Length: 324
Image (cartoon, rainbow, N blue to C red):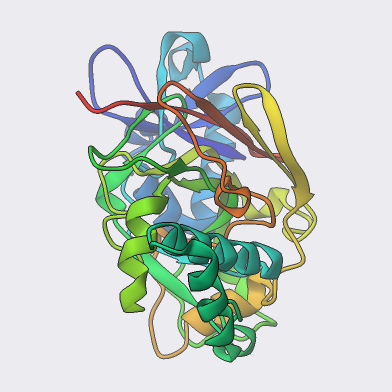
């Protein structure tokens, strides 16, 4: 199933199934009449496989009132408030190129950039730390800053170097703890697209403290998710999905979701070690190689439209706008 969250001119946001004919099956309305309402996407996720089977049965007997035309509603992020956001860095070429870009930005702010770069190289600052090869690494994002497809992303006032990031994310069904790589994918409810818009100039300055990103990532509208959650049963191999990024219609990269230093299953298993993963947790696997502008030091301008596409999930489209 392709699961979305939608809103009409009046009423609350509600979960739905996106059908091939551009109709929506209103899960909230149908389950309320059935006696056990699933009013939002977190409730749908928590209901698990049994809940999906129930939704499928309800669709078979639904009347016209349970359907909506996609053109008559507005899609929000399919999971408007993830329980938690964790974002990994799993693709070696992206990490290496991003480190090099960060060093160049830092050096450019000094009186002699070339000499500063040489000092950085001599100090080993261009090298990927050994720990990255040994275990998955991630930061935690702000689940209160999530927007969905076709939403505007507002540039932070002081940011000059804005960027997009092409990422596949898993939505946890859970609760699950101490998973192994062999059973970790059983905890996945579905997959979606994640774009953590980033203010690279702010991020580059902050991470000199080696404490992870802060205001370079944390700003309202900064985390875009969507357009749907594709349930896990629809994904044969999450490591083999075609992924594409476009800016203003120009294709920037076409790649696949696999090839990370740590597999999707191994990443989930590691994060679950000694820590319960809950329904609605979102874990992004990291930016794919060449999946952002940072790696080539090319950045977004106000008004640019970013489209991220992942096979089976669809297109997540967002426009960067200046602050009011």
